[in-house]
Image (tube, rainbow, N blue to C red; front, side, top):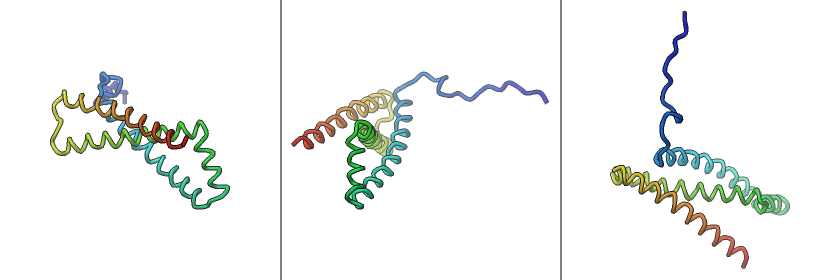
Amino acid sequence: MATRERPLSPHLQVYRWQITMAMSILHRASGVILCVGAFALACWLLAVAAGGESYLRAADLLASPLGMLLLFGFSLALVYHLLNGIRHLLWDAGMGFEIPEFYRSGWTVAVLTVILTAAIWFAALQGGAA
């Protein structure tokens, strides 16, 4: 039996990247990041409950540059997933189905994600310095 050259299904390299495509992929990725972050949060809560040395190790880890980077990534994913989830809820209500509205809402979510995440970190760092 001879092997036939079958056409491949269209995939990411076939399509031109659009904001709607990127937003969908980022929504799924942020959901995965939030799931992993929930386990990290549970570990931190266990360290708090254990007290003493366990808490100090967890606090030192989170205060390290890597810990801060992970916390920033988690907060960015949380804000993005929340805002894009609201966008999806609006779609479920029947709003925003015209192509210009898709793009406008996508860019709105992207810009607000950056602004709100920066505001959260600014407030957190100001509160920590006091």
